Each structure stands twice: as C-alpha cells, then as structure tokens.
Length: 248
Image 1 (cartoon, rainbow, N blue to C red):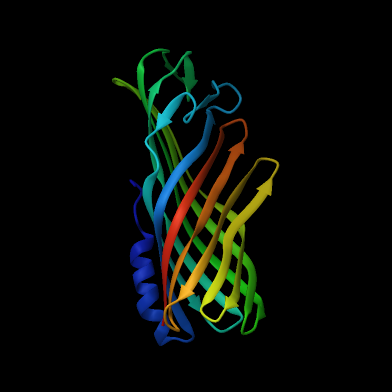
Image 2: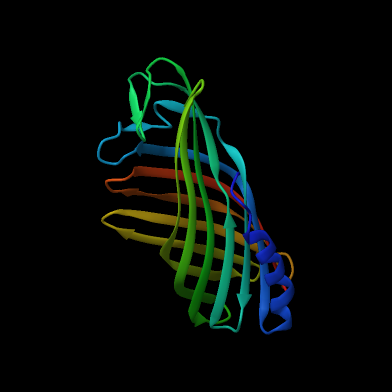
C-alpha cells in the first residue's frame, strides 16, 4: 500500500472534532480477505497489447485488507462520510507473446512481475429519505479520489502507468432491522457511463452487541474500469468481510 495516507489524520481529526459540534459520530473498521477475479489491461488504450494480469500472470491471493470509515450523523436525515480504502495486488509469471505496454516492449517467455494498485479515498454526503425504527434508507453523492497504478517488470526493464483523479459516484445505504438485535446492511457507491463504470457494494448481517456497538459479516464486490484512447483497464475484486462499528 504505497500511497500517502493523508486521510488517516483527517479521520482522526474528524472523530475528535465532530462530537463537539453536533449529532453523532460513527467509526467503522472493515477487514477480511480479498481476491482478484479480473485485471484486464491495454495501455495505450488504442495501440497497446491487451493482456490480463490474472490470466497471463497469476496473483498470490486471497490476501488481507483493511478499510476505515468515519461518519458524521448530523441529524437523522443528513450524514457525511469519509472512507480510506487502500488496495494493491502483485502478480508473477511469463507472457506467451510479446506485450507492448505504455510504449515499452516486454518479451514472451521471460519471468515477469506486475502490480495493480487501486487505492480509494472518498468523501460522501447522504440524505436519508426513510428513517424509522426498523428501516433507514438514504441516497447521496460521493467524491472519490482514485489513486491507481499498473506496472510491469522483466529484470531491469520496467514500466508503469499511474493516475490520480476525482470521480463522482452515487452513494446509497440501506439499514433494515430484521430482528431486535440484527440488521441487514447494503451500502456502496456506483456509477456507469459509456467510457467505463465503478461499482463498490457491500452486503452484510450486523449484530448489535450493545446500543452503539455493531459486529458484522458479509460480502463486498469492487468492479470497474475505463475504456478510452489513453487506457483500457477493467478489474473486479471480491471480499469476504468482517466489520466493527462504534457509534458515539
């Protein structure tokens, strides 16, 4: 996880400052295992050689991951959320054909390593349209900072393509109380266009050990990519997750 973790001190300051202002603050830690299903690449998008990190090379997965989220519940209708979600995978193998990647030629049959980084930092606002004792549902907007890099190396030969940009997404969350201490949670960010798409959705079952402490297990999928003249890249990751939520 090589990206600067600028969001960590912000989350800490967020946590100390907001309770003094108004409303409630929630800290959420999510961890577990993640594995990669797909990592297709062609760079440049119009002239590079298409290859797959998962088919042409192989990943050492599943691997552990962590996500941190802070939520300011201003009142029952309005919420602001900050998320830190680092993610990176390493690959190894040999290509069965020459690969043109970002202007560099990689030979067939030679030991090759690759890396795929897709760190995400997000700030979201959500409005809760439904708020009652058993059901809470909200929609909002997310500003996602995407910190991505794809790299290949053969011996002393190496090449990488990195990109940092801001992507707007639709944010949503459903919290359904299905029993006195059990909640079904569905949350995520998603948006699609002709140039690509981004989907990050989690589904979990949460047990409220106390009024303010929740423990959950669930599943998450992260899928997306872009297709243009500069870059073609699509990836899909699946998560087996466990989480702890503390509200104060």
